Length: 87
Image (cartoon, rainbow, N blue to C red; front, side, top):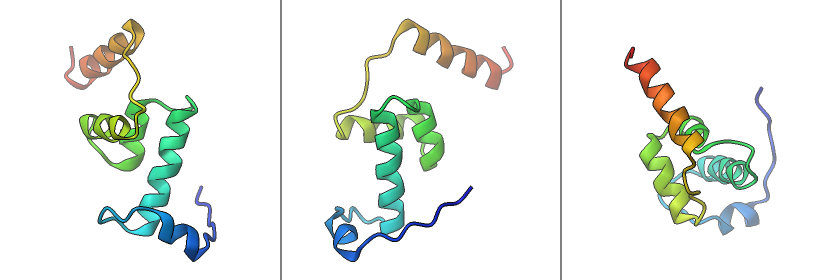
């Protein structure tokens, strides 16, 4: 599903440029907020933003949001890697 939103120019100008297009900055902000609210995982942040997991972790760390990994997080990551590598 695609959602079209009109964002006032003043709001768009308030976003730091960081060499990204305005629509990319808005999407990144929404995805980061979903993570902040606990609605998506760091892996999902990476997927939605087209980043490698380590790059997503770096983005979240810059925002002060990287959570400590739990044993369950590590087990989930291991299971995903095992599936990818056929173990």
